[in-house]
Amino acid sequence: MTGDPPGERAIAVAGLKVWLEKTLIVDGVDLDVGPGEWVTIIGPNGAGKSTALRAIGGLLPFQGLVELNGVAVDKLQRRERAKTVAIVAQSPVVPPAMRVFDYVLLGRTPYVPPLGRESGADLAVVDDVLGELDLRRFAGRRLDTLSGGERQRVFLARALAQGARILLLDEPTSALDIGHQQEVLELVDRLRAERGLTVLATMHDLTTAGEYADRMVLLAGGTVVAAGPPREVLTEANLAKHYRVRVRVIEGDHGPLVVPVRAT
Image 1 (cartoon, rainbow, N blue to C red):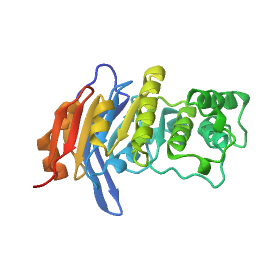
Image 2 (tube, rainbow, N blue to C red; image 1 turned 90 degrees about the vertical axis):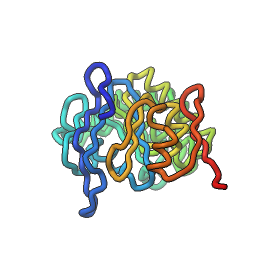
Image 3 (cartoon, rainbow, N blue to C red; image 1 turned 60 degrees about the horizontal axis):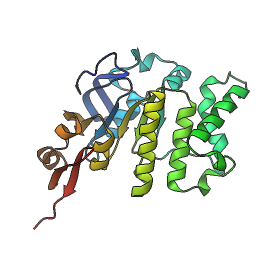
């Protein structure tokens, strides 16, 4: 387990196993996330990070236990699940020529009755979210005309429009330059504080991950091999063993700094 945060758990996972095309990808993962906490899953390519995240969000069949706010995710109806957890995929599928406002409005789908249409309240929620994320000026723009950082803010806006308090982020900064990486992560951290969001993310950049996460879970071969505060997980020994790299870990102001060491 990753430890027991005080109070009830927003996310509780025990014995999670996921098969893809008869191959076991996630093998017995245990983790938990307390309300308002930020936990980041790290690990080498093929470790099962994204697969675990999608299963936790109810997007993949699995064995084991996954509870969101005390309710089994596989017992939630699709609409109720969407009101509970919002997922920002690594590369979201965007319909061609879709405009920003319409894309964010898709986040209100769980609240629209079958054969109904969005209410004035739904439109107001979208307008508020666009304002909060400084996106109102892009409301009429096509998504494919925006920069990577702008699009990532739009993807977050759709997730926030769902009204879910649990946010799952799959590599939210993978396609961004360093400036936009920081912008997006600072935004998530601010929204977490302001809205009381619970964040479970996957990330590749170890230094950046360690700066923002309260706790980290290191996966290798589909299992948890280390878990705890960043300073306990991001050690030279852990990274050498599971990433097969030579690094130096330096104490930073907000977390460990992971510096690759060139082979001599």
